[in-house]
Amino acid sequence: MSDLSTPCRPSALSRRTALKGCAAAAVTGTFLQPEPILAQPPAYRPTAFRASDAPKIDSVTVYHGNQNPDDPDSWRLNIVCVEADGVRGWGEAATTYYKPAAGIPPMLQTLARRVLLGANPLKNVVLWREMVDLIDGSYHGGAAGFGAISAFDAALWDLKGKLLDQPVHVLLGGAMRRQLRTYANGWCYNLTEPRQYARAARKVVDDGFNAMKFDPFRYDEGGFQEHPMRGGSTTSRWIRLALDRVAAVREEVGPDVDIILEAHAKFSPHLGIEIGRQAAKYDLLFFEEPIESFDPEVMRRVADQQPIPLAAGEQIVRFDDLRPFVDKQAFALAQPDIGVVGGITASQRMAQYCVTRGIGYQSHNSALGLNTAAAVQLSCTLPNFVIQEVFPYRPSDWYELLENAYELRIKEGYIPVSDESGLGVAVNENWLEERLTRQRIR
Image: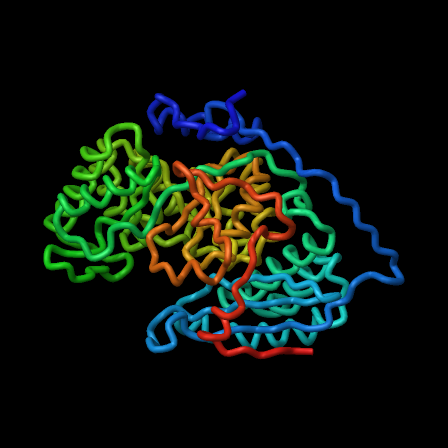
């Protein structure tokens, strides 16, 4: 067994060969790792509640608004606090983009009044079911509805952990790992020349990461964003420039650093296949979202006709939307967003279903630190966890939402799993008060 103080390094086998063992590895819990990193459980801290004195949720606070109050185009944040017996649990909706995010506050208010107030927070999965029935019972809840559920679900797990003085991962069944391998995202904005990408990638490696993700198709030669119409085609020049950037990064970081190719679902199937074929020579870990995640048959065709394992799922909102992709083996890595699909409770169901089909799992993670904390608590319990997305290069004030953000704890590319109660983080309420609108619901 590996020394828990030493990061587990990738195998010398090619990534494509390693991924062919997904099915067996997912069952044994050693997915994409040469040895399992087993956890020592935290000390048992018993807390008992009689039925007569069970805690009750007595208030809910909703914080919402733009991440930058002076920029109306900045991300819209929706953060919740659920309180019982003077203890607070926190959660975040990761639906941060424009109109869908703007629709979340009314849903949070409805869920608070109709489901949460007066309820026993220890029955959090029952409350999750009631929220899903309310939001999704008659109509598809969409990213706004399930984003609202995600925020409250994380807050309820956080609250339950604090009331019982246990980390959430213990309540989920126990951590299988004491640390999670990560990949760095968000390290190469506003770059144009391949050599600029290479220099930026070198910094990522120098900072201790052994895996990274980037979208080389985002900018043209002049630095202008060039997102083509989804499902459309583009020029050979543009593809050549993008692949030159990939080649420069691979040459700079060498063969032992994993690279994930991000496409933001911008290609048609035939173009995704062609790009995958051309990019395969750079030994990529995954090809993420080459096409939209709407048709599992089409996604499977792209997977079969080019050699890079696919990662997809961030556009998926409900378990029933994920299931056909898993059944069709349409991708090698499922990555629904824990802050969009219904929170920790929904993500655990999705990950467990992927185990039965030999598919790896990670929680897509592009929101703030509460989303990262929820992902860490879940991911360390999963036998088919592969790697965790993080954004370590954002402006420093983004991390000030939390007094102890997981992004700031990363060492040599690994996040240590916390045994602090709840989600293992502390919220800086001054940060919220300075930026967002507060509404308290009793």
